[in-house]
Image (cartoon, rainbow, N blue to C red):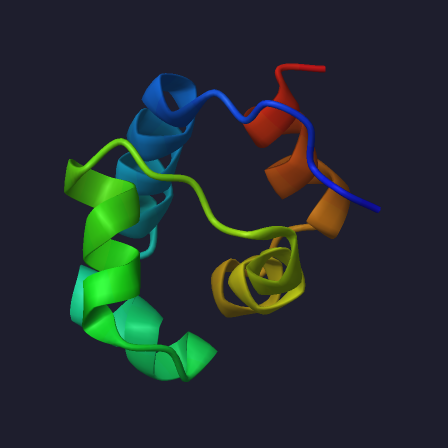
Length: 76
C-alpha cells in the first residue's frame, strides 16, 4: 500500500509529541529503526514524511499501530 499525499506538517508535530511522550530523541528513534539519523531529522525539521517502507519500523519503534502512523500521514 502506498501512502498518498502525506501531510508533513501534521506528521512532524505528531512525531515530536510521540518522541516527547516516550522521552526519546530523534537519534534514539533512528537507532531503534536502524535508519540514518538524517532520515529522521528530515521528518522532524525538513517537512519530509517517511516512505511507505519506513512506516512499519516507525510504528514498532514508537509502539503504535501501523494504522495510526498511516492515519497521521494521510489525514484519514
